[in-house]
Image (cartoon, rainbow, N blue to C red; front, side):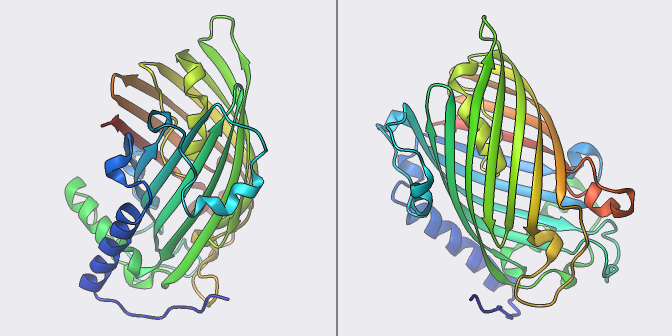
Length: 338
């Protein structure tokens, strides 16, 4: 059992923790950034859709070991899920490491003490280890995520900085955020390229995923339609989006438009349920969630850019507006080879 952490950390101490996590993740990994052959930066923000509350900001930096470095092996943490992969030799493997930070806020960020039944202030700083094995018409993903929730995540500092840059309203209720807690999540997913047009410029991807952990436990299924070129070489990248490693990425000078939907049943979600091992702010929510996403991915030479608009809960009841708005946001990914 994980004991609750109840430490009032100063901003300087939190910055040291933030830097230490990044150094451990990037420097202590068997394959660090200098040896990776692809990197990406993903930025989520609700400003893209004209709001400034709920799921308000997310930043993710990932580096990838791909087939250009022979046949990548799973990272240290991802190996915990190796038992779930089918036997046989995959045609292609990708190993990705991600350092990310996400945060959520109540609807009214001008209130110092938000109502107890409103979405709580919360921030999460995490490191994720992802491994993808690609076959001819399907791809498998395993991932392990570890992180810290609460003031030590530095979410307040990040939002202050982003709001200064975007000249947005200063959030006033971070003193009520969820407390420090070590968190984790395991994930297992598969996507099938179930149909492709004769010309190869259209296809349909079907997927399934299960997650287990204190961050979120869920089961779900998804479908995505794509139109563009060089689709055969990039269908496995759709698995990156569900774990917030990156958006789906175009490869080999390809491009495509995409639109997708997914159904998920959520057993627990820490941003809704609050702290796992202590009393905290929380909200009631619909455990059945239907999401929509649409965007464009484009690549040329050693660069790939993706932009998408997401609504991760289109069936929330009217009485739960804070959940309905929780995950309406835009997301931008820039990936590059070095």
